Length: 189
Image 1 (tube, rainbow, N blue to C red):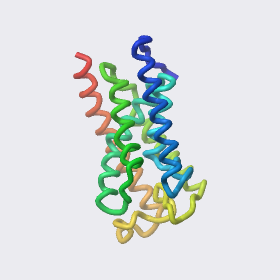
Image 2 (image 1 turned 135 degrees about the vertical axis):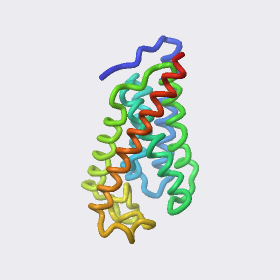
Image 3 (image 1 turned 45 degrees about the horizontal axis):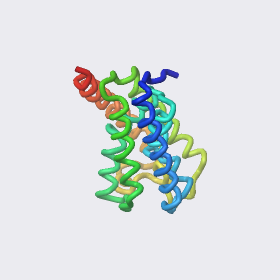
Image 4 (image 1 turned 90 degrees about the vertical axis):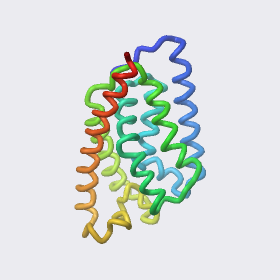
């Protein structure tokens, strides 16, 4: 696992940010009706990956989580807020704080290689793990119990819906990686 080379001066703020993010996740679990099941949600997994990346200086985790959060998580969260997601403070924090921390940790550095590929693999594994773990259907974590209601008429079942989600995520992650490479490259100058 490739570690970020940070000076001692840079290391402690990253550890503090990672710890704060883990604390936010704990409060999120306590306050959300899904409780621990919420930790299977892809955006929450990305937030945990960001926290681990910050705490242990794991550059690949930071890069993959950042690409996922910016290319998939934030747009999905925005759609959810306009449709079916109940607004809550910790949910907002989980979607906006980790990408800020991740971007700050990677500023002036190149995006780790294959960040989009790692993010996509993490996304697919998380969704399939959620499906196998079978959270209570009323939580519909990662849409593993039912197709997202606004698209239920279009998709006859979960399998075609998952295939479409995985394909759309692959494209968004590829585009997000290209955009982030440009931004991070520009900040290194």
